[in-house]
Image (cartoon, rainbow, N blue to C red; front, top):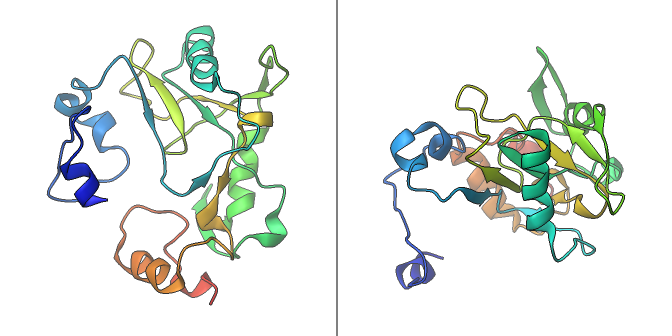
Length: 190
């Protein structure tokens, strides 16, 4: 990846000395000012829906304008929780399973997209999202809408069979500072 980024010509690559976390580019006004009006942020370990519409970026941009929110992105699939790791995350003042934490983001429906995909009023961090600076609020950087249906993605690190080599996952779990679901290296299979 580093070699690839060393040779990218069509985009500007900004290198940081350290991993400053998922909210750095949103909170650091000097970095934020370098971004275009519309930009996307994502976790690297998402499996996108095979039925994702080709115009999905336009649909997400439409939702940011319609709902006057700085972020519109993918809902995360929790229907196959029997395949997920039993890792615990801190949510609402207690430790809960990943899917128990994620359920809250499926409870505040908004009108669906014209194609029928459900839309929810729900915060969104680094799960794939299109950000719109026209509606972005620095005081509430995670305010968003999530889209289900054909937009629903799988967060691979939640699964026992994540497709990540076990030693790599364990090394990451020990060294990372920001992941809410990979802190517990003991819950990783293998």
